[in-house]
Length: 410
Image 1 (cartoon, rainbow, N blue to C red):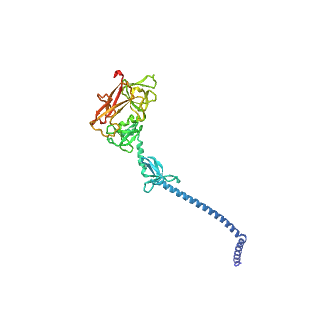
Image 2 (cartoon, one colour):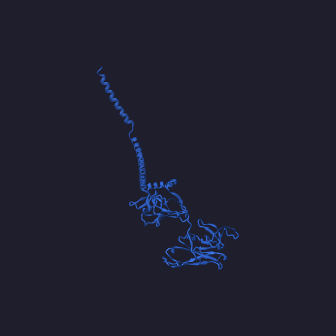
Image 3 (cartoon, one colour):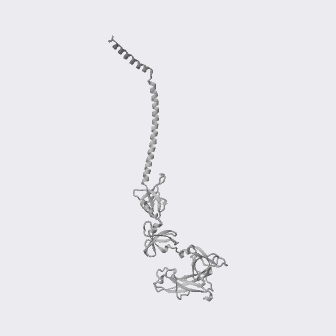
């Protein structure tokens, strides 16, 4: 019957299947045990996560401190500046930024250093990468901030070639004078000495307008001048030779004197010196000859007999000489007179030391205005000589020459 079939089939199918399936699932699958296992695993994972989190936080803290220290060190390094020690005597290093504090070191002039300036820029703390190093300070009175541009200019000037210097009009010279040479601030008679060039040093110079002077090349273009005569090798002064225990003598015999190669009595002469020739000699204990010294290089040029020479200057501490000696005495010796009046009689007396009773000799007096060129005084042939002071001769240098002669030649 068509009316019955549609009513039965829909009523049976929905009532049976939906009710049975949920019941089977609820009885077969437990719900409590899985919940417990899940809680234990979650607890372990949570603990591990906590430990890892704590460790990571510690590492992050250390990294932060290191980063802060690094930034601080970098900031300090950026605040440092380079200085150059410019004080003539260098710079003392102090334990504190106070000149009353302990001096713990020293920096030489032209030394370079890195420092951190205080706010007033009066003190510089020496920079060190080692944080454990004690602080050290220098006064900025002794230093100048390094100027890179100036340094580059100076380097450029120093790098000029010899050809470039020659093109600028300079020539290179070497100081041969064993006493060195003074450098002056001008070519005037009253010029001040502002520097000194040591023996062997080299300079670039060009002739100055003033005769006998040269201008010295300087990197900072400062005016410096040198006497051309001072560049050449000059003999040492008498005082310097005497300080080295040399004795000044002259050839006493009117026939001159022979030079020998050694001290042997039977040696043949290797040279001859004229009468009156001045020498520097070195005395030899027990020998009847003295070594002739070349003042330029202090070498021995030969030997001369003691009987052929007369000494005129000897070191103060040296006792009586084994050769003849003359000493000139003046009434102006050992006085505090600063002025010699015109018209005063001055008598010079020659003392003969170590001369023999049978010595025959002649005497002649000389004078010099500059100590280099001596002029004979007519009819002045005695051991004493008297002159009257005037406006000129007050600064003269006087010399007596005693010449030994054979009896028949006197």
